[in-house]
Structure formats: structure tokens, C-alpha cells
Length: 294
Image (cartoon, rainbow, N blue to C red; front, side, top):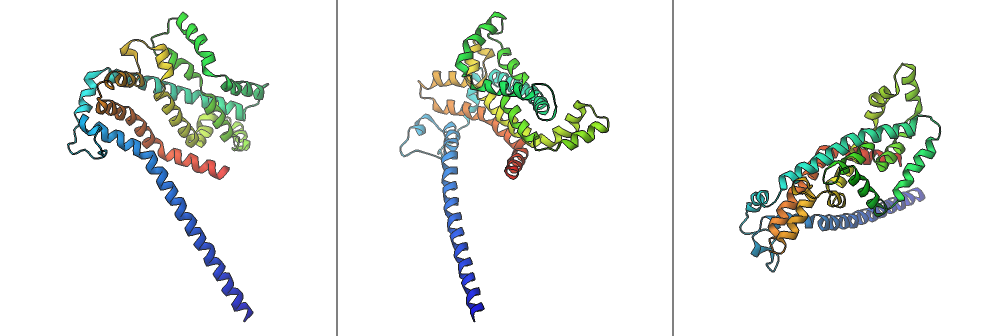
């Protein structure tokens, strides 16, 4: 009798816990759904506005789905400013920096994590301490230096510094590499592999998910950069996409031509979506691996 009562009590407690878990999951789902709507609503409004007429933009109540959908602004933006050259300049800067910079950052992270050399930790701390220096402190000296060698109004000030790596990527990959056993490297050295062979045959395949996650974040930061280009670029044909869109905003916001501005913004957003779609598997794997190791 007591055993039956005990089992019944356990079943009641189990059902109570499951009920509480379902209620908790329900509220978490509601909270996350609200957050998703809040985050995606501005994006949907941007796309919707790019397809509207000027009258629909200021309509009350707001019109989410325009009655007359028009793609005319997407054809008009190409003749209203140097949009194509802005896209090509942004691609040149972003691709060259992320591809070469990711390679050099990976090599540096491998060296700091797995190689033994004198002053390794001190050099790494010195590099990482540089992130505490505010960019406005470096802005004027950098401009004077690039101006003295004739790099102003070229893409070189935006490209060359990034080719030597990104300290945040180096730090992230170094932490990731610290979890890889040194025995793998020792075994490869016994088999006669050089350090560079160890890197591209063993290490790099292991850190691909982490590299992909950092690469897309770095690409987004470079693609959306506004301060660097506005400091160094003057000629319209040398400007990056963010400067072109800023000029659109300054020129056409006065005319209340917000559909044109939003169409240009949608075009600027497309490369980000493409990069995310290409690397989404690696990004998810990186998050999963980081969660397991944490």
C-alpha cells in the first residue's frame, strides 16, 4: 500500500514538474517570438518602403503591403549615383582584407597557441592590450602617415592594415586551438611534417567552423564601415557603398524620396545575406562547438 502511494506521489510530482516546464517553455517561446518580430520588423519595413510610392510612405495608418508594388526605384538607383563603383570598392576592400587577414590571423593564432618561442605570452598580451587604445587617438597620426606616403583618396589605407590580421580573430582562434591536444602536433612532427604542413593539413580543417564565424563577423564590420572611408576617400568613384548610400540620404531625404534610399539600402544588405547563407552551416557548427566546450 505504501509503495503504491509512494509511486502515485512520484507520478504527481513528475507531472507537476512537466507542467511547470511546459509553462516555462511557453513563456520563453512567446518572449523569443516577440524579440524576433521586433528585430525583423525594421527589415520588412525597409523592403516594403522600397516598393512604395512617396504617398504610401507617409500614409496613416502605415501601409505594410503597398497596393501598387513598384520596382522602379531599384532601376533608378543605378543612374542616381555611383552605386556600382561603391559596391565594387566595398567588395575589393572586404574580400581582400578578410581573405588575406583571416589567413594571417590563423597563422598567428596557431603560433601563439601551439608553438614555443621566447616571450610568446608577453607579445600576445601586448597585441591584445592595443585594443584598449581608442581609435580617435590613432585617427590623426594614421591620417598623417598615410597622407605623407600618398595613400589618401585610395583604398590602400582601408586594405593594407587589415592584411596583417585581426587581434580579435587571433584571440578567438587561439582560445579555440588551446582545446586541441598537443599530441596531434607531436605525432605530425614525428611523421616529418613541417609547421606549415601541420597548419594547413591538420589545424586549419579543425578550426574551419571558428574561422567561418569570425570571417563573416569581420566581413560585416568592413562592409558596414563608414568612419574609415569617410576619412580617406574623397573622389566619388573611389567611395565605398556606405558613403554612396550616405550621399543618397543627404541628397534625396530632402526631397522625401525615401523609397529610393530604402532601395539602395536593400541592395547594400544583399551581400550580407549572401555571405550568411554561404557560411551559415559553419557558423552554427561553431556556436554548437563553443557551447559544448563551455
